[in-house]
Amino acid sequence: MQICRKQAKMIEVAKEMAPVLLGRARNADKDRAVTQQTIDELTDQGFFRIHQPERYGGMAWDISMMVRISAELGQGCGLSCQIFSDLTVQNWILGMNNPAAQDDVWGDNPMALIASSAPVKDGYVKRTDGGLIMDGQWSSASGIDFADWNNMQVFVPPEDGEGLPEHRFALVPKSDYDIEDDSYSLGLAGTGSRTIQLNNVFIPEHRTISSTKLMGGTSPGSEINPGALYRVPSPTLETKVFSAPALGIAKGGLAMIENDISGRKTVGNAAMAELSTAQTRVSEAGAEIDAAEALLLKDCDDAMSIAKAGDIPGIDDRARWSRNNAFAVQLCVRALERLNPLVGARGLTPENDFLRMLRDVHTASLQIMVDWDTQAENAGRIRFGLMPLYPRV
Image: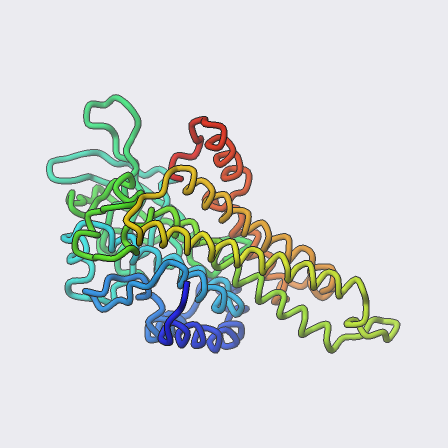
């Protein structure tokens, strides 16, 4: 993808922000939260609006821009970058949603931010006249402390009581849920991925959308938001929520090691930069990170090209993108693991910046959307003409 001058400027701003975010990352990790100042700065620079529809003041840029910006922000603070990617993707998904839902969220506040929760606790959903009733707990709502809405993932029981539940997104305003401060994690601890509690909340039908309507081509939102961006299958960018920050974190870890080695000597007073082991590890890690970045950007560009041609990608394309996305994260993990021995015993202290990056990239790699075993098996099954085990490809 060719980037325009405005896009290049935003990438440069992200690059300039990275050292500032690095200075805050240790406290964000310790406090289990990024600061409001960081969110305000990301907001002021327009980062959250890169995939928001133009009719609400957004930029509606190609999906690769989230990867490019994450590759810079993540070098400073993976926690802040994770929140950026989470909230940014939800703006894009809302752009494909019903026009009435878009107006509910952005009509009075075009700057409104949206988080998302996973249905992995005891959340209960039932159909009712005109919508859904939601009750119970949903988890993993990264960035929820700063969000005005939550685009919650739900499984809606079939109308006739037979068959499989329907996977939907359901938009809930922050006034309708409580946040539990229960986010304790060894990695990405400052993302604030907290549990959400709802008590028999009614969600009107127009604020819900089946994920089957977001699999490429015409969507409810594409009727009013023209252009290829809102015709791309939602999993294509949803899965980048973890891979894009992982890329930035890995790039930051490599830069940190290179800078450290340049001025270090061994206990025998030999320059570390002259050690072949250091040179080889840095070279291999750099190649792995470059390969991960190239893979992510190529798949973004391929998805946009298909959408611009007016076509809909098939399951083979989507499975390949999911596979590549998970593999890119594996490359980032391998790169930092490869560099870790160069840190030495200093890397054993909790406040060590490289150790935090290593913890963060490992945590990102455990999410199901980028879990290598899951996505590799899924892609392999599809290649052999079998039904996928993980349906949202």
